[in-house]
Length: 168
Image (cartoon, rainbow, N blue to C red; front, side, top):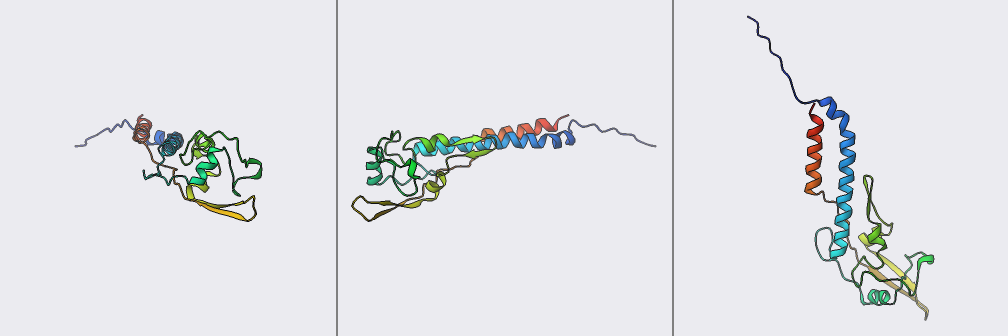
């Protein structure tokens, strides 16, 4: 006696294989968006990527901001100013003129921001020539605001896209 069976499935691994590049592309873009939103939120809340408060501005930095200045050897000569900049960030670290904050964006599958973000993330030392002669040297503490957390919504969308692509 011979038994014949027929097996049918409602999944297609070939379809999934063909859709994987698109699913990954969409998911990486969502992750970049999540990271941009969270990094901006960290600046607004003055916290690092772990939620720890950022070190506040020094009195000298607050005074420089109050007069609208931008000084230091790490600032290109054509961008240095002794006054005239609009202080939208008050005494909040990382949000003086808003340029860094506004530069944080998801661009396709990447998180992009102004090049000097790395300096602020890691901390740096700068020097400035005094009008009376000599050199003033100061260290800016690290302010690790860049976040790369994947939201629940992004994770759920990724798995939903995989399941959808797997179905015939």
